[in-house]
Every structure is written in C-alpha cells, then in structure tokens.
Length: 242
Image 1 (cartoon, rainbow, N blue to C red):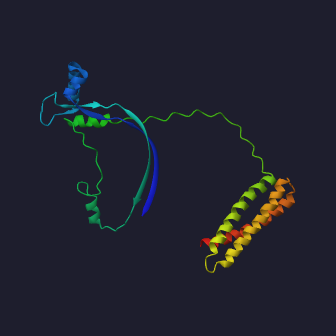
Image 2: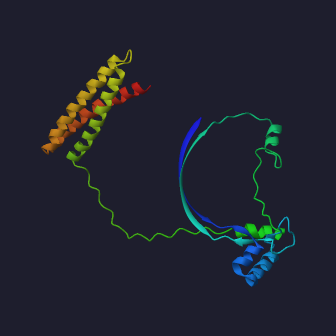
Image 3: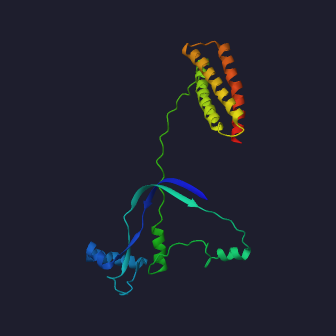
C-alpha cells in the first residue's frame, strides 16, 4: 500500500464556448446585432437546434466565446493506493484494451455537439491557444568571483566542536536505548564511554578557541584524537543499525 501527499501549484488560462439561446441574444444585443450573430454562427455550423423547436432560429442555440480567465491553483492531495500485478495471456490483454469495448481502452476527444462537422471542428479549434512564454530574465551583471580563503585552525576547531556535540548526544541516546535490550549491555557501556570521551575533547577545544590558541601542532593532535575515536563510533553505529 502506498500513501502519498502531493502539493501542486499551477497557473491556468481558461477559454471556451457557451451555447446561448437565440432569444437571449436578442435580449442582450438587440434584434439587429443578434440577427447578425445568429446568421454568422449558422454559417459556421456553430449552432444546434432546440429539441422541441427545430428550425426556429430564436430557439436555436448558438455558440459564443466565453470570457477568458487566468487563475492560479494550489492544492495538497493525500492519496492511498494499492497495487497488484497479474500475468495476462494475449487474448485477455486484447480484450481489456479493445478500442471499442475494453475497460482500459484509450480515451477520446469530447464530442462537439454542433450542426455540422465543420462546426465541430471550429469548436475544437476555438479552444486552441498558444501558451505564453515566461518573461525573460534580465541579464545579470558580471560579478567578480570572490577568492575563498582557507579556514583558519580555530575555524576548523569550531566546526569540529559542532560535530563532536552532535555525535556525543547521539551516542548517549543510543546507549540509553540499548540499556533495555538483552545482550547489548557491553555496547551500551561502550557508547556511553565514547560520549564521555567526546565531551572531554569538546572541552579541550572549547578552551583553545576561547583563548585563541593558534598552535597548529597542538590543534592537529586534538583533531587526530577526535578522528580516531570517530572511526570506532561509525563501526558501532553500523552494528546498532543491523
């Protein structure tokens, strides 16, 4: 079973047709303008007769262009889906995908109800429209690339302190979680010992950065001790996650 959440944001431009009764056209535009519109639509095939009053031009329906709309839609959809697979023989597959009766046949275009095939074609062509291109971005001025200076030893020490604190906290959490697991007491104790060791490294580096100690040899030795302990922790993490 698959559960998904989908967030979409889209812009849409809407255009289309609406069928208007001849009497309503007269009421809206007056007799002369309505007559011009009705004759034009009849000549284009963009109309259809009223079922109860065929050949009555005032009861006939004439297609008129709808006002265009420009909308933006945002939506969040939650869905659950169960999928299955089955091996189908050739006959069953052809039956399911048959063009006229198959359950999974391809869809078709909606029928355009008009007085002629030319009118149906005009209806569909009237819905076509090119998608406007996004406005071009202005060319950015050339910016001089900044020279990245290498980090100082104190900056490296500060970065390492952040990692030490995070790993020490993780080790303590894992140690407490394993405390209630049978046969995991030794690993739990080792994780707690590792957390305490990392906290000592943290305090040493904390004092060095606070006093702005820039002795490269001293700091490199501190870094090496931390990395040696971290190698064990990575191996321990792998054992816990197995």
